[in-house]
Image (cartoon, rainbow, N blue to C red):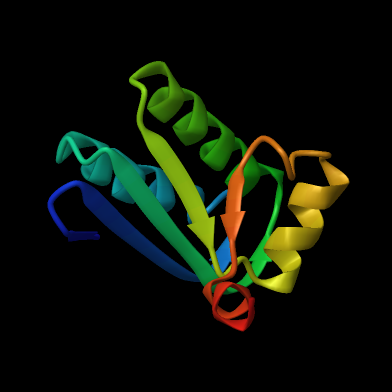
Length: 104
């Protein structure tokens, strides 16, 4: 977790599943505890995510929305993007690919 004042950053790589989801949840909770208005979650190096990981992201999104803060997912890897699309949650999450922003 990295804190830039009003913006906190969380990076995760590898698998997000039943075994590793508690680590992601803890990192998101630590970011929330900083009071940052926006949390950026970099999932570009995630190679696998199951429904447990998705549930952690939904839980975090609800928490941030309830306190009028923003959770942004950046660089969502293909496995993460596919799972979010399959769950029909593309409009629920703020998904950003910084590379695409620079091409506009």
